[in-house]
Length: 172
Figure (cartoon, rainbow, N blue to C red):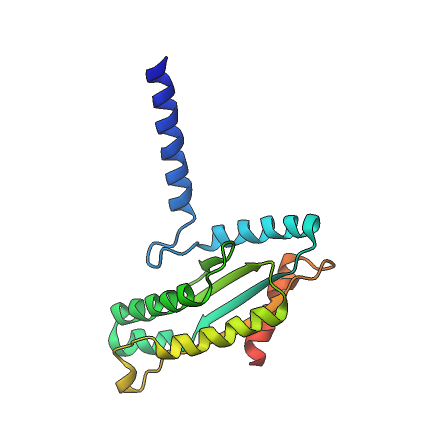
């Protein structure tokens, strides 16, 4: 029975590993779209209990297509990894969830964070990304990103919340 317990424990760990892999972006190691959607649902439910503020940042890497077209997909991958490094340098909160939700799209969920903090962190992200070493800057391909921030409102759906963050991204 000790062997059976060990086998069950091992299967449990393998299942956890598989679940983590299923929610992880292979290139960046960040959460993927599934992880993002689950985080949003979980945080909205928690917000209903705690009423703590909750922010989301949507981030689009600017000009990924020209980078890929000019220097190839390996350069595009380097750009995505530079964004990932910048995200890790800025978003250090315990509950901060960093995700790559599309080709050039990233998202950060900030529990216990009001809009003012989200906007400050967005500005810091812009500054850190501008400093990130990037081999193609000399060729005029500057690394930059568009960022939209929105704080959760109790009356809205998750889709409406993401829509406001998306609109904020294009307003900047």
